[in-house]
Length: 463
Image 1 (cartoon, rainbow, N blue to C red):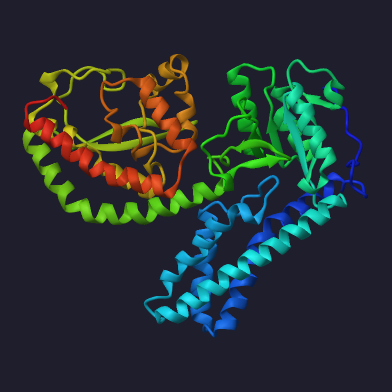
Image 2: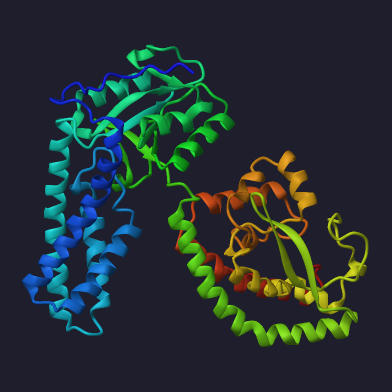
């Protein structure tokens, strides 16, 4: 691979760009700047209004959590505090609810009001300081552009003319570009994205119509997110306004870009889901244990077989897990390679359990152990998972996360003999748009989904 380096200089700046070895330190400063400004603002507000240490600590912690969940610590391109003033104010005021049980309404509201004003002021000062540093070639974000078409050259020119935006373009990645296209160095092909980003310590990627297939572009962008780089996409209809909140848009001197969400496999997400699974799964396992004992006794009396059925399933990419279910079928054929269940296999008790998905409850033990998640794509048998990975677009992508007891596809009725293409689409939507709120929504919808299944069975329907 031939790599042409861009001169370590930013036109319009007065100093050279920091060498790659200093990029990690610059990234740390950028990541800590806004949270530090917010903590300082809340602390000063507490001192000014006379709030006690305990109340300040509770309010400060709640404020940081709410602001983070609102996405207000994301390092935007061309960020202005005025664009986010409304969302910031709401995020600082909402945590005042934490204080109301221990504080009169008046003092709590005064603390919130002063905190809002100070957060806006200190953030404005912090952003002004960042822009001043960027103009001098300090704390810059190394940037790569996916694509070498005319818009890529336009964006690079705007960034060179406006160093206060904080981006230093190292070059482009494209499959058909030549070194020097649009005056930009060629860093490599899209298949080399991960290596290039690591070599140049790239922290920002701009996607500008690269010459690539859909699959090649998806793989390249996923490599960017796995590297930890922030990805923004230039919309093809950029002359038309997108229905995206202005506070979340990126902007390069009047050119809008749509930021992509962070890597769905990021450690923070894995930690959050694991802690939730461990806590909620343990509680649900204890609460449903008596019900599972009753159902197990009913299965034993109905089928005259051990009530628990164990089977190996694909629980994630490269991961197999043995799941446990309540037995609902009479033995017939090989359960690992049989897709359609005949009506004669299912007893009356089995139809109720399958229709309500109550036969899945023993899998709560797998959730607590960490083999599965509460919410995620359903685990499939290895025989069928291998077949569908080769024939259904996006099916293998759903294995990026742990399999779940319930999921976005399931609460939309996509269980049993339903469209695999639809299931894969819903599962991948869930992975890309995951949030704690979406998990809670899916868990809440699981209960009425089970009741709907019971009503369907009572009317003579098939499970």
